[in-house]
Amino acid sequence: MEEENNNIKIIKTVKRPVSKQLKEENYFKWEVTPKIDFNKILDVYNKSFIASWITDKIASTLNNWFICQDKQLLKVATNFDIEFLVKNLVVCGNAFFEVIRRGDWTIVELVPMLTSTVTISEDWKFFIQKVWTKTKRFNRFTPLKYRTSGYLTSLNEVYHFKNSSLTTSFYGDSLFESIIDQLILVNYIDAYYNSYFENGTIRTNIFTDSESKLSDKDREILTEFFKAKLKWSKNAFSTAIIPAELKKLNLWDEIDTNAFINYRQELLKSIAIRLNIPYDLIISDNSNRASITVAMEAFNAYTIKPIQNRILKDLKNIFQDFKEIETLKFNQLDTKDQLEEAQINEIYLKTWVYTPEEVKNKLKK
Image (cartoon, rainbow, N blue to C red; front, side):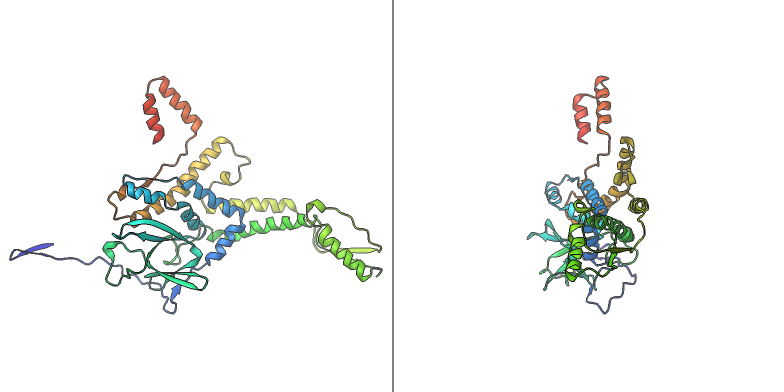
């Protein structure tokens, strides 16, 4: 609002509206750590074939680059490690990038930081990075127009990408958080069979010398035989000759392999349902081309697009000072059947619905 007073223009400003919600109480902590340690959730990712497959599938599908009318912004966005971002959002629920500015405060690069090394200060103002015994502080990303006199210009900034969470406002939730038990169970079943075959499919037993004829040396040979000779499938069903009568005591019942296999399959279905990923994309034994196409379209619509929209919103916040920021967007995902599309375009050409040049332009979109 402006008022005229003796030819002097007075501008009255209104303070930016501020939220008055209660903040999480962390008065006795200098920094706030995530509710699930990042290293633990990363360990699940590294040891679970299904968790790593889902993560890589989402990251590779989403990594389809940007388009933008601002060439300088497009250059920065193109060099942005989106695969690193997506993998961390899926696995850890959080990702941290150092914001690099040049002398005029223009952002020229976003540098990824190892998620497991970063925590948040209790007052939300700083990020703390710890690598071994070294500690480094960073400012929370703040657009130029919102900086106050207390902003420490000597520190670099960090932008925090995160998923939504219903339990904390400091960190985002991992996509795997609610299915960690299922992922671990799948790992247990796989490890169980690995151990089963590694030991020559011989179950845990106790062999006793009922006639007490084995010498200490004989017992040592027998022990080494079961440790080494029967190890792994190539040595399965090997035979040892012992000069004594041995009695075998079984320590477990017969294995119902079908029950384990069926339960493992149900676990994979549960995981797919929770992550909103069509089961046909994980296990495609009974799938045909049509069902795979439908599954891929659903995957793109319900899994990839929401993540893209969240990332794009964050990037527009980071690069808000660029003039053409609103033109920044992802390339369209290609979910079409390419053979079917080629046949349709061929019909268009033969019937003169489109010219060859128009078909080329159509394919570029």
